[in-house]
Length: 476
Image (cartoon, rainbow, N blue to C red; front, side, top):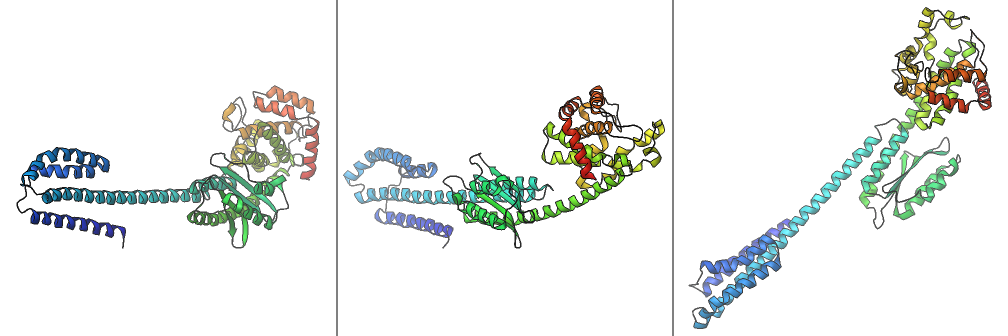
């Protein structure tokens, strides 16, 4: 029997009880004195309790009214006009009404509590579904695997109200952990010991058994949820969540995280395939750029050396990760537009005419047009297009000035200028390092970003010359 049906039966029984009690009243007192004042005295306590939902207030009101009522009816009892049975029945009826109201109050409170619990469960379900959707969206909103997993971990923690979360991605070919991230809700914990052991010293000897051991150790640690990230038989890593103090995960929590673990594993596999395809394509573009540079034996390693210098400049500037790799790639490809420069201009031993220089000035835009439709290279396009802009706004192709020139392009411009000065060209010999440094100082603040020039002057020297020779030998 459902709770609602039971409550309805109780209410009907209470109603029948009232009817039977009132009929008994009429049998005992065929001519009752049922004045309006008596009705008010008898029902006010009941109404008070029903309206206020407070038994003690109703009892206090009832006691006060009884004190007023008794002096009125007691003389009738003494003179025999009202029997003690009739008086008792009046009070019994009042108590019965109060008892019925108490039952009704209890029924209403239970009903309201059920509604509150239902609303709480519904809100929790809505909240869970929102976090599940957010976690799933995180796995598809970004082609960058690390960005995907960071957002996914954040929403997984929120989904089950965990204290902390940890996600590990394993590369079976490289035999090492390629991604490990911890996320804490309240910065309440440090990286757990099993995770520290797994990633200690950027290990390159990690085996599948190590990942399984990590999963088992984390599962035992503080009653964590730890699910493997599997695609078929391939275990790509693990997702682990640690509960808050004095709180345990439920079976529903485990099912939710297990479901998300499957989706995460599929996304990781897709991201790795995408990254592999992207890298193959970028390698092909780099090979094309080297072929174009190889048209002139004097500049065949130019882009490689510029990329090496740009890498050092960017690191001293504080750049790292994706931003750093984009700058190095842009430096590698910055002269790809030289494909349109005729050999007669490219190999000309003397100074270029104004018309010939106008042809050379087209190569940044040509390089940009060649690469603009390649989605994987969209973040390197500013370096290719704007590396010949000048800090004073007198450069090309758009005449950008100062900080309006993308940082990537300003870094490549400094590295490109120094490399060009210190390398042989068809129209001149290389310039000694000291003289090149002086020339850089002369154009600092006009042609080149003065801050980046200062950084380059600090890092060039004997080590730069050695690095330059090593880069050239490696390129060969």
